[in-house]
Length: 280
Ligand code: NAP
Image (cartoon, rainbow, N blue to C red; front, top):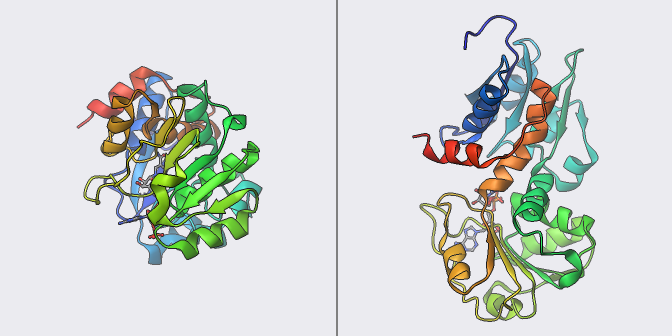
C-alpha cells in the first residue's frame, strides 16, 4: 500500500501503547476491504493528551481509539460526548468532524454484548442473576450494558468494596454488592459469570475461584485476552460450561470506529482472529 497525503488516518492513543492489538485489527480490515487508509499506534503521555487530541484535525486524522490511561480523562477534552460515554464515564472512540470538532463515544458496552450474543446465543437476560467480578473501567461498561438488557439481578463483587458501591450508585438498577471474600457463594444460581478484573492476565495474580456452585447452563466470560485461554476459562470448559473469551469484545468494540473513519462496516471473522493471533 502506498501512503499519500490523502490517505485517511486513524490510530490508538495510549501510554504505553506497544501492547495494543488494535493496529492489527484495523490493518487487517483495511487490507481485507482494499481500502486506502492507515491506523497507527500513538504513544501519548497523560500530560500530552489534550494537545494530542486537539492536534488530530490539524494532522488530518479522522479519529482515534483511546486506551489506558486516557479513557476517563479524555471526557473533559472533547467538544461532544455521547450519552453512553457520559453514563459509563469513559471514552474509547473519537471522531473528528469536518469542522474539526471532536466527538467521543464508548463502544465497549456494545462490544461486550455483541461478543456475548455471537458466542453464547443460548444465554438470555431473563435466565437469572449475573455475577460481575471487578468494578474498574471495563466493569462500568459491562454493567451499563447488562442494565440496558434489564437483567434480573447483578451481583457485583470487587476487592475494594467502595468502588463497587460507587459504581452501583452512579449506574443504579438491580445491583447487589457482595463482599469479595464471598465470591464462591455468589455464584449459586447465577447464569453468567463475568471476570472484568485484571486477575488471570499475564503478569497478574491468579483468580482464585472454585466454579462448583455454577449450574451446567451457566456461561463464563473472561474479558482478559492475554492469555486468550485463561485459567478461569479452561476450568469452566473442563466442567462442561460454555465460555466466551475477551478477544471478540476487542474486535466488536473496534467495528464502529472503523466504519466511522473508513466508511465500511467491517466483519468479525475467523480470518481476523487467526491473523491477530498469528502476527508476532
Ligand atoms: P481497571 O479499571 O484498572 O480495573 C481493574 C480491576 O481489577 C478492579 O476491579 C481491581 O480491583 C481488580 N483487581 C486488580 N488486582 C486485583 C487483585 N489482586 N485482587 C482482586 N481484584 C483485583 O482495569 P480495566 O480497564 O477495568 O480492565 C480490566 C481487565 O479487563 C483487563 O484485563 C483488561 O485487559 C480487560 N479488558 C478487556 C477488554 C476487551 O475488549 N476484551 C476491554 C476492556 C478491558 P480494585 O478496585 O480493588 O483495585
